[in-house]
Length: 126
Image (tube, rainbow, N blue to C red; front, side, top):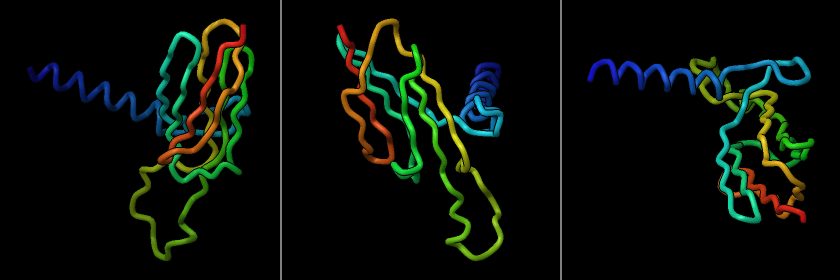
């Protein structure tokens, strides 16, 4: 039982590092990757990207071959709060997430913000 608990803690730490620590992006500048959910139906793919605090003006989402690329920036809120920063766990700065989509042609059916998430609906083009 102790071994399983340690394994779960190790998996959680790997996930935290994957999503919330800076990593080199395609442009070579540090960035973080927002978590995503992908839901698939016969004709559509719905992609939810967790981006609380990001405005549509700071966001770009494009299909690049067989990849949906979501990139942008979440600015630091420190200017809003006087005082010393004691802890920063929310990732800020430039982000980029590349999400593989299945083979075939897709078009963006819908793109909206909902409850801090970017929701993108992709429709398969025949």
